[in-house]
Amino acid sequence: MLFRSIVLVFALVGFCRVNAAYPDRPIRLIAPFAPGGNIDITARTVSPGLTEQLGQPVVVENRGGAGGRIGTELVAKSLPDGYTLLLGSSGSLTVNPSFSTTTSYDPIKDFAPTSLVSIVPLVLVVHPSMPVKTAREFIDLAKKKPNSVMMASAGSGSNTHLTGELFQITVGIKLTHVPYKGSGPALVDLLGGQTHCIFDQVSTSASYVNMGKLRALAVASNKRSQSLSSIPTMEQAGVKGFEAATYTGIFLPAGTSKEIVNRIYSALLRVLELPSTRDAFNRLGAEVVSSTPEELSLKLSQDLMKWRKVQLQTGIRLN
Image (cartoon, rainbow, N blue to C red; front, side, top):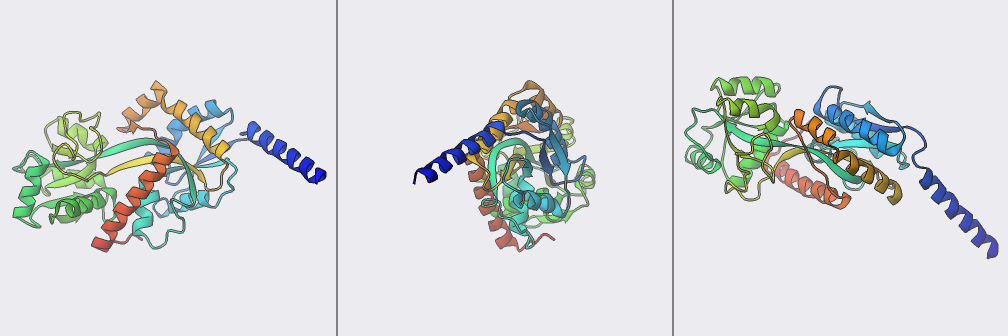
């Protein structure tokens, strides 16, 4: 009995030393999309600060493919030792699992969340020729003339498309979906009056709104956008229960010790509080937002329910 107690004490001491020494080698931050995109840029924006806070290099590693599933799966299957992090996004952790039959990871069970990092609000914009100035007027028009309003998107299954589908379900209207190969071509035709509306990222539409080339009706986030501060949220515009925005957060594999999760969480919060971090995200059209691990886990659960409802009602599937 005495021998077992001595062994247990030494084991606990060893465990504490391992965690006290963490990290003692470089850490990988997996960006599950190609270089140059929003997720990659977000990862490279926070990695220098994490490097400074943790005292070890935090190296961004791009593992793109399958809409973020390949890199996300890699982290889900990694050792829970704190040396592989995921820059997760709403797309890879809530949309893909809801609309794809090939997703092999469970967003809730396979990851240990730390904090949200950033959010890019979506905004409902219309061509100035549309005889509506508010979200409620837009809804009333669409109800009077079902399928007459043409909704552009960046492509079938894109966040602009799925947000539009969620909006239709929420308010009970029918729009005609017009998919494009990217948000650029979609905006070109909207600016030209070939389509009527789009749910676009504030970061790309704000300049057109400010020039009067597009009209913003409401922002699909819980608070107003810094880039379009005069535009109400959907809630403020009278559309209850509708929220959709692209966001990112940092995750570790499930089973990672609480001590390591807290170390990453604390370091990340300090990075997000830096004025330089906020300025960098503002230049990207994104906004810094933090959360507790519990809040991030709850957000994932709520979004999964939301998007699975859209999938069931529309039958949309992603390849």
